[in-house]
Amino acid sequence: MSLLPTHPLLPAELIPDAAIVPQLAKARVMVVGDLIVDRFVYGNVDRLSREAPIPVMVVDHEKTMLGGAGNLVRNLHTLGATVTLVGLVGRDATGEHLTAMLSESCDHVLLRAIDGWQTTLKLRMMVGQQQIARIDYEKRQILTDEQIQQLVAAVVEQLPNNDVLLLSDYGLGLLSPNLCQALIAAAKKAGKPVLVDPRQSDYAAFRGASLVKPNRTDLLAAARHVPTLCPADAPLPDQVQALQQAYAIDNILLTLGDEGMVLCEGATPPLSLPAYRREVFDVSGAGDTVLAVLGAVMATGHDLKQAASLANLAASLVVARRGTAVVTPGELLIAIAELTGQDSNSKIMTLDQMANQAAEWRQQNLVVGLTNGCFDLLHPGHIASITASRQQCDRLIIALNSDSSVKRLKGNSRPIQSQQARAVVLAALANVDAVVIFDEDAPLAVLEAVKPDIYCKGEDYRGKKIAEFDLVEAYGGRIYLIPMVPGFSTTTTVAKMAA
Image 1 (spheres, rainbow, N blue to C red):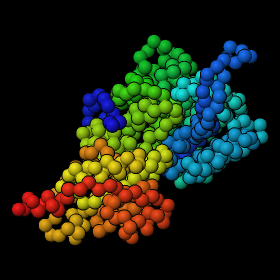
Image 2: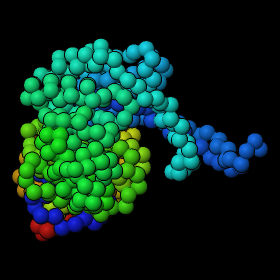
Image 3: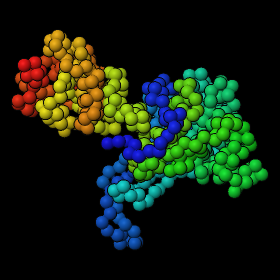
Image 4: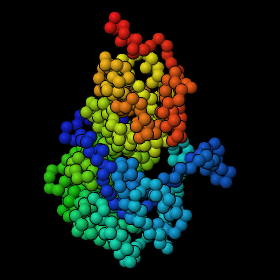
C-alpha cells in the first residue's frame, strides 16, 4: 500500500534528498521543554448513568505515552538521533512514571524533581477511536531565579556534546521568558542553532532564536503583540516577516495544516511547501514530528530548505494515523521513493539498513519474518512459498543469495538473472516488505543482524539440523516450515530451456 496515495507535482528541489535520512542517526539533539504524560483509557459505553444523564464507560485497557517535550524526544529517538533532555518533574507518581518512560527513549536524561511542581497528566477517555472526555491534571507554574540558573547550567554543560537545541513550549511554565533568553544566549555563544515550537504568544521570549515554528493560530496571537508592524489584515507571509524583524528571529517556518508550510528564511522570499494530500485522522503531535525532523536534519549540517522539505513529508505521514504517532526512517525512505517513482527499489536494503528497519518494525509491535533463497527464475512454487511465509508475520524479509553465492551452490552456469534483477523482481511483490542480498552460502550473518521473530524454511528441511535453525532458536526465534508445492523447480526449468 502506498504511503502517499496522492501528492502534488512538486518541483525537484522540494522533494527531500533520500541520502539525508540515514544520516539522521548521527544527529545529536538537546531538548528543553514541558513534559507531559498522555494516558488513554479505552472502554465501551452501553448505558447511561442513573446518577446523571451521562454515559457510563466500562474500562477495557489503558495506554500511557510520552507527551509534550517527551513526544518530541520519542520522535527523535525513532529517527535514530542521540537525544539529551533537560526538564523538570514533580515529586509525584506521574513524575516517576514519566522518568521511567524517558529512560527507554532518551540517551541522556537530566531531570530535576522539585517540590511544588506538578507533573502534567492528560487523561483521555476513548470509546473505539472517539474521545468522549479529557481530564487534565496540570497547573501553570513559575520558576524561581535559582531554578532557572540550575537549568541553564545543566544545558551549558551539555551543549558541547550536541549539535542543536530544541525548545518545546506547551505553555506549562518551564520555558519562561527569562529561561528562554538565557538558553538562546548560551547556545549562540556555543555556536549551536536554537529551534522553538512556541505556545506563548509574546515572542520576546524567543528573541534571537535561529528558527520559530508557529502554526496559524500561534502566528495570529503573536502578531497582536506588535500591531504597528503586523496589522491583523496583513497577508500571513508579511506577518511572519514582521515578527522576524521585531524579534530578530533568523527564520520562521509557518505550518498551515492541509495548506502545507511557508518557510521564511532570512530575508529571502517566502518558500511555499504544498501539503501532501492525505486523509487526516489526527494532528496530535504532528508539530513534534516537524520539530524533530527539522532539528535532526539541521544537526547533521544540511540546509533549512532540505530540513523543511523532509519535515513536511514526515508531517503528512503522522497525521494519517490516530494518536501521537512517530515516523521511522524506513517510512521516510519509502515515501521519498514513491515521490521519485522508485518505490520498489526502496525495499532493497543493505544489511545495516535492514537491521535498523527490522528494529523499527519491532518497536511498532510488528512480527518480523525472514525467508531466503536464490529465486533465480520466479515460478509458482516461489510465489506460494513467499505467500505462506508472509501469512506467518506482519513484515517479510527476503534474504537473497548473491551471484557469487548462487554460482557456488548451483554451478558456473547460474544464476540466469543478476542479483540486482532478482532483487527488483522480488521487491515488486506485494507480500515482500524488504530484500537484502548476502554473499555467504547460508544467511547466518543476516539472521544474526536482523534476528527475525520467525524464520521460514522449506518443509524439505524437516528433521535436518542446520546452523540457521540453531542460531534462530538460540536467540528465541521460531522456525516455520513452508509447505512445498510439487512440480516446480528452477533447475528443472533451466534444463528444459537448455534442451
